Length: 192
Image (cartoon, rainbow, N blue to C red):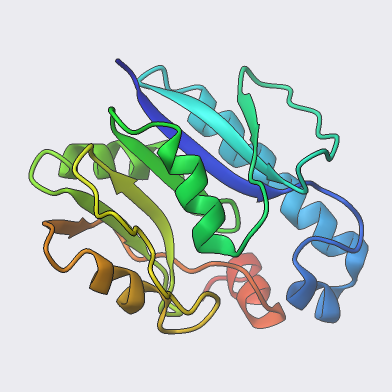
């Protein structure tokens, strides 16, 4: 059985993606960034034959063109934890990784590292520099409530989620920086 990678994304629509970033660079530039980052990630991940790639889209019925051999599922309703739980619960027996699409440096190499780390851990996280995380990979041994009362989009998101996994073995892949603000975007476009 192949491992599964679920990429979580908003459908690329003007004015609905990367809203905090759009405040500083404009809706069109934010849409271009989102589309380019999502496309590059899907191309890279789908090219790796070690796992099956699934795109989990919101809103559910949004049209999105998929130029790669990628399966599409809907995220459904609810907060981020509810939607991620729903997506991961579709793959309860095998190993599954779920990742966001706003980390330009992330790719199939990181996912392979996460799946390797699952050999000694029940869950693997890809921490983000802001206190959140950009990836979670799970084996079949999972807590009943994956995300509990995690405070999403805050510096507490990773710590809150790790609390749910306190009775499970956890591991980490590299810490990366997501692009949510103009400062993040400038750091990505003009690295020091």
